[in-house]
Length: 611
Image (cartoon, rainbow, N blue to C red; front, side, top):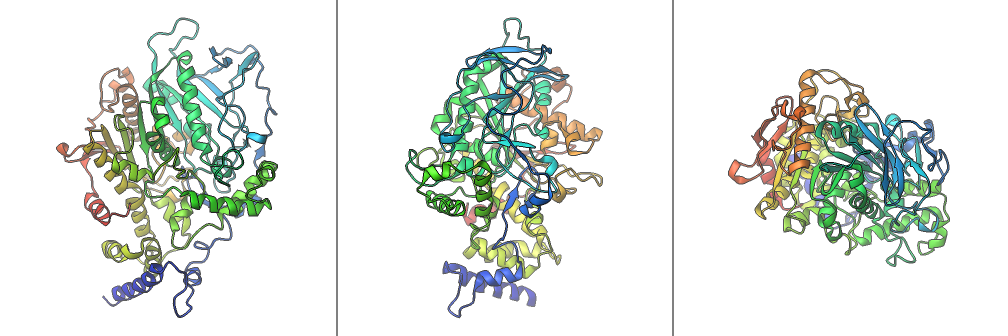
């Protein structure tokens, strides 16, 4: 009991400081310095973090110890307008010209199709432009460069080897039974994947996202797309889009790709009226924004939101401008001198982005650690926070939505940021700095449940509940109340042996953030592990649920199921509604519908009213 009183005393002290919105109290105590002494390296960082949300959080200090990424210039490298040396492969005629793909054992694949002209030179910070007509047959037999980014050990094997500003490409995976040489039969549903990576990393061509398996097993056309990242995609240097960078270009890129799909997907056997958007982490954030953006409304029919970090706020215009000013200072350009900014090399922009990332963390806004760069509320394209829009019904409620989380989302973040054990006193300070006047109630709720000396497990659970699970549940309930069709899941599979998934070092034996991806894409071999027979069954069922949703808007529908999926004997996945006791699908080796296991905790967060 005495230790509990000490916690509350420290919490009260921190609350008093936090409530003043200052870093010093009347006695001149510097809270930032105090926090830095407790845990140096987190609050006021000397180096930026790369947060690859599919895998883990890493410091960029190791960047100099790895092979530097190849940075290509536009149009250099392998020719893009030559035929594939006569090799077998389908040829289609799009509105932009002929495209030749490749045929492999699972699917026809068209890699690296441009959906917009290169955003280079004077067009660096401009909305995407339509593709220019091109002569000849475009060679779509290999992936193109990923968008500009940097990452470091130990996830170098997950990093794209070639990056470029010229990166607005997409990949298309088509089932083998689509015959391009004869009139197309019934068009297939289309699934468009938006990758995660904290809006600063990731790639559509990452082997983990190999779309041929989903395409083959679910009989859908799968599209994956690249979009501008970091400062290239989200820099805000002023308000006038003609004389400054206005931000949100990465979201506009996604929208341009969706428009390209609408105009061209029929020649690949796809149905433009049956487009399902799906994405994970920052990709799910992107999908949620398209559900809010009116101009995106006709571009897709339904959505899948995987591990959407609802409680990580988008920046306001003011915050985005402040970040832009800090960025310009690093480049030695004036923030108002767009000519100077445009003259920077891609390497210089990336270097300034990384340096800027290390200076924006506010000790009272810890959540910025997880998303320094990204979309901002500009009042036109994006008008409010996603969690607010979903609760108020300001989204496309007529569209079916499938959304869910993993059972231990926060593990990758808590153990990635906090490399050493965190004491109860330290955790109290952090929780107080984040939640301010709500900290006492949160501490009373969680501290008694975690008695180990190292409180990182407690912090991981708070991250899971506050950022992911509970705001997702609240949004789902708000959507259901408004008449929307919603299905919820929790990926709850825990590894049964001592395997460590490649790139998931902090997710050892946990169903953590991104852990469902090797199962959904049937790409476990990429993560250096082999699925057991029960795990393979889980992967098959997930493929079929997502595929059934793409075909019919209902993950449990038996209509139009492939023979493969009929053989899986899928457990019924009920719609999320109070008439079924708010049942969610527990995706584990014995998948089943169940009442939410943390409903009492989410009731607590709902009543706090802070997301």
